Every structure is written in C-alpha cells, then in structure tokens.
Image (cartoon, rainbow, N blue to C red; front, side, top):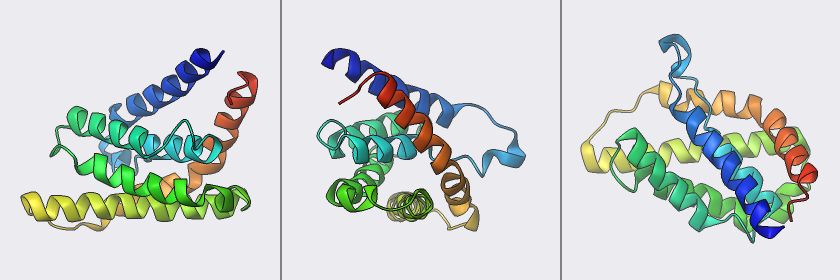
Length: 159
C-alpha cells in the first residue's frame, strides 16, 4: 500500500507541473498560480516525513529544466519555501484555512523574491511588480487545493 501512496503523491506533483507549463492566454498568464509550490506545501504539511526539502528541490530542478531557466534557481527557491513549512508544519496545521492561505501567500512571495534575487545576481533581470501577481491567485486557490488534496489523501488512505 505504501508504494501506491507514493504514486498518488507523485501523480499530484506531475499534475501540478503540467498546470505550471500549460499555455494560458497572455492576459491571465501573469496570474498563473504556483501550482507546484501549493501542492508541495500541502504534502509537506500533511506528510512531512514523505514530502520534504529534497522533494521540493527535485521539483524545483524539474521546473528549471522545463522552463529553461538557470539551473538551480527554482530548486533553491522551492527548497527554502518548503523548509519553512517543514520546520513549522505542526503550527501551520492548527491555523484556519484562511490563515493557511495567507501563510501560503507569504511563502509564494518569498519563492518569487528568491527566484528574482538569484536571477538578478546571475543574469541581471529587472524587478517587475507582475512577478508577485501569482501570490494573489495562490492565496485564493489554497482553500480549494487544500480540500481537494485532503480528499485525495483520505480516499486513498495515504499515510
């Protein structure tokens, strides 16, 4: 049953990667939520012994490869954000869903700022406020993603 559980977790992460690279109209592409980060935060809160910083780094590295960005930028940002969740998962679990959404938003903002800082250092990019637009949609989508993934976890008895 444990291998089956791992497949479900990997499947949710694969769906998150697909949602992250799926083409969107230009008018809404700037607001694309951080699907991979949201899913990682959920699984790290729910099962911190199974989904952790290493998982986050691997997923970030895959995003680097798929998006064609400097290798390690998304990996480092993802690992830092998930590290904060891994260190505080017991506290975060006890917050209401809207408080968790705000924490997820702060983590998404941190993620984008780390990506920006690393890119600024490595390839000298300019900061645009549109870098933080995904934070808004990430906050709004957190409750729905949380309840959906919790339902998946309970349905497949993932422990």
